[in-house]
Image (cartoon, rainbow, N blue to C red; front, side, top):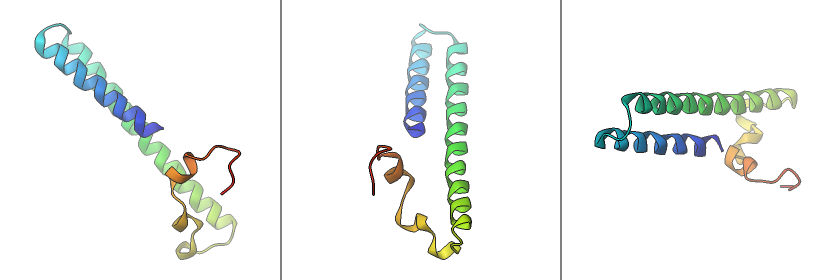
Length: 88
């Protein structure tokens, strides 16, 4: 979901640049869109890192070694696309 937000902010930036180039928006609108996109990218990185850390904590709690990680067969996309009540 966070990756979709980054795409959305990228579209807002492109739109703001277009409006600025034709003179219908101020430069501050482009700058704000750039800041919003940067913040969205930062949030995406934080979310990805949180997932990686969670996998490590889970694997450690289960006594699994790094090579035999449960993550090797499961990806973040496959987990996030499931509803909370769906079983693997």
